[in-house]
Length: 593
Image (cartoon, rainbow, N blue to C red; front, side):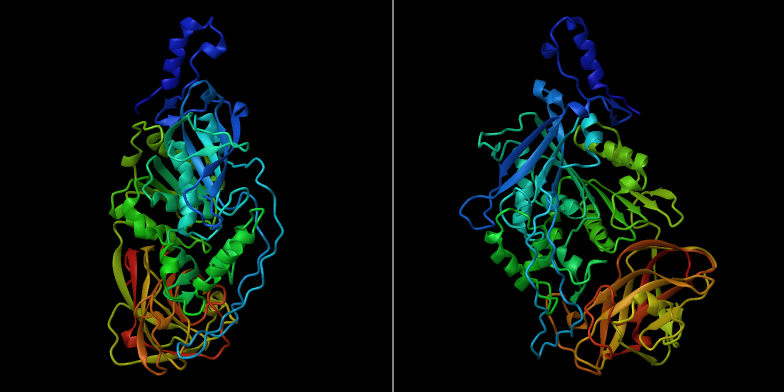
């Protein structure tokens, strides 16, 4: 492996001048070994600055451009002429959050011909949480010691920043982008006293990184194609806000936060001192997000970064949990697929945990991966990272594998069809179904999907299982259910689960998906349901990478409302499934027939 030792070369050049005062000697430069930046800088001596960057947007409508509160932490050598790249974290969370109630989800579903049912919200609590003060980050010392400056930016409407929080709208992207522009001398900055502040210590090469919302903002900024943003590391990040709070027209919640929506999150992070200018802005979010129909709309289209993926030029190292039901796997999978199709430098890490940072899962290997990514794209050291396997996947037993690409290139589509017995446990076959067979269930949102899937029999779901597998079978990608369904009421939820039945009979949910049958024709248009008429309802489950062990049974469960994710109408809606017109398509490695 090629070795680059810029810092050591600089040190050799200084030796003859060792009698000069320290201030006259060239500063320590970065050192690279085996394609990785080495820890040669002292984080304890870092320079700290508190600044503001002007963003070209007035989201609080006060007649002045919004300003972003920024904290800079940089190696002391930058005061002596060393210029360094930046790792930048933008966040709405640095100043805490407010106590905000979620929407009521125990409500009837919308019927187009009748007035909708809107769940009225109480006002958000007004207590301010902790001030930003000196922002802390687990990666700060690691990055500083390797010659990167670390920059923190408070998202608009939070902490000391002005403007308004809007849960992913364009103004938040512009606010976060303005810091990249400032680091490249394209946007004005000033210190708390109003004196101009320039980033003359920066090379202009910027990486963005963070978890959750803090990882979503890098996706947003990268979608602008801003010059200078060379790499991003989105961890558990959103690529399309509609898919975070909706699914094929159905109103759904992030896992663990039933009833949350775009307005709730905006109120939670709205921590600027003077909040009155943003109240009307956030009230408009409540109106525009539309919890009535769940339709895709201009409101959601503004928050869909996939629209501008053609503009992404930053190298993307994505990380996501295969068991993340907060920011679901589809967010990473669809972003990654779009980047791959456009030949943007890309790599993905899939781990077996939920909504979390890989630092606590596989620290040394993760830090090495991160270091090599930033060394390649921020310091432009040719370490060959772009030639390495594109996918790192943690298996169910905790082991890790590296693969050429994701989903597994060897995965092939297989189709399964249900056979009668669903109220108890029906079968699954690769053969076509002869004759018409219809089975029914009745919605009961008080019961969880996990309990319904595990029940030996139930009137509230239909379950179908294949024969015990002769060999392991890997599902890698998106499972799709095409369900021929009729409804006895003009509104219903539809939920489909992929499940794993162990030899002892226990059943676990692998992945799931949801749809509103009123959006069967298009996610941006509600079409009435005629009770008794059969419709083809397509349900795309959340992408996964899961291995079914030999002796286990692969299963499909169909139900209506999903207690932990969908709206929860009163029990009683009837659904009828025509088995002869129903099929499940799975991307598999191995044989399931």
